[in-house]
Length: 110
Length: 117
Image (tube, each protein chain N blue to C red):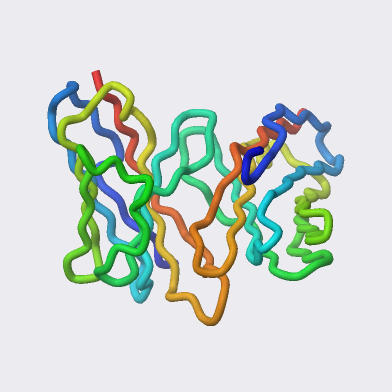
């Protein structure tokens, strides 16, 4: 079992729709959770971090964390073509290295 | 806005040659990370520094890779000799020293795309 699992996609959504990206992790002691966006050929860019169960909103982005289910998700409202990228989920526990998933490729269709 | 600097942005080399990458973290960030990212995969940690000390180099192929951060600021990652399988994006990231529990947020530089022929 991979430590951090993501569906590789591509996930295709029409412009203006909600994109839902999911991530599961195996280490029940994980404490910090991050979502990064990576455009093709570029480096990862932090979108959001979340540490507590529940939802955290930032503009069009909402991160959702459920530690009991070992599940973290990212919702993108009003998806735009510029949101087309690979989204990386990253997880760690205190004093341990951050582990990245392989990413989900999102395609927003105009 | 402060950024992590890396150079070169692109490097093409022949196998068995030596290559070196440089990283300058965000000012005030005590923790520096080197990652390797193969196409289609997530970043894999090679080495982590806290100031000038190595915290984690468990995934660094020490027979050919070396990393240093002598003054606890900028860092160099070296590969000698390079192999075909080393072709990848090499990413540097930095974060502020973590407080009680949890890793602080990492910010990535633009990366170095290495191609080994």
